[in-house]
Image: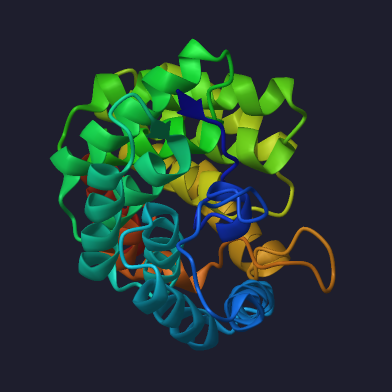
Length: 297
């Protein structure tokens, strides 16, 4: 049996009560005061929706004390731990829940979110394993979440398996596009273009980046990448044009006034952020460093 879930993106934490089916039936042990239990459940749910993660954690821990063998509460608390970036605690809860669930049962939300916890600990292989299992079961029901594909691509990128990363990014971009999720399609397509550079397919990468740049008017990312690539080819004017547009016309990375900040010009001067958080591959980070430092190609 496979449980379907939804997962919101990059950055990337899932909506807890959707992921684990909060409103679904849960087998309960006999208790003297169901009203007290129900109050804890309502408190956990409302706290999570209000982003009061500490409150949600306290309520779920109290529920677990009442029903210590019920796996669904561990799965829910695991997601709170993920959102709190307490990744080791999340994995403990997810592992407990997995052991308690029936052998044929698979929670897609738990698999992808446990992968996210492993990813937070830079345990890339374990993350890939869990993402891959989530993708396998998603394929069985005909609904592969593009966010999960993009996340597995990030992990392949982190272990230097750039071809596998490219396949995941391209597939994620295609699914995002089919579902008319423009921001997701742009992000995955940007990641794919970066992988092509690392694979030596620079001409293709530049062509793809130019396409993304036109579609994402308020994003610094591909303009910064193009600046680095054009500089590495000795095309200083194009490099400067792309970077100056990023820093003078965009800078904040906002598509619209008052909208969310997608990326920012100054962030790209932080090479640790560029490699570890934004996940640019090594050769792109080095190209960009040379551009910023005006090192001749």
